[in-house]
Amino acid sequence: MHIDFLNSAFDTASTLGHRFIGVKVHMEEFKRDEIIINECENFTSKLEYYQKVYDENLRHHFSKGISIVDVASGNSFDELQADLVD
Image (tube, rainbow, N blue to C red):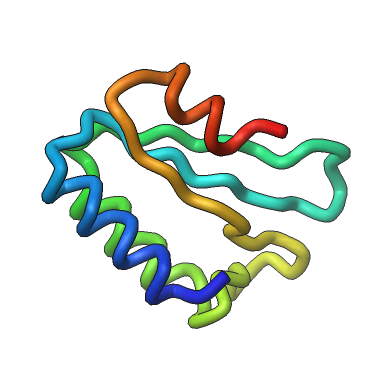
């Protein structure tokens, strides 16, 4: 996954007026990926954070083995679960 996809997902979520954005994070030491859910009021600051902390391929700059592997937006947790949880 590339940072352009993440940027586009946040832009689309804002444009469509979605309430939530979910980011799926892979961590090598865990069996399952982590889902982080942010509310629309935090979209701008969270995207800025991700842009600072992750490289262009969405690998964490400071913690080897951590990467963003998917992103989805919607108006309910159920929508995010349908898109992000295997």
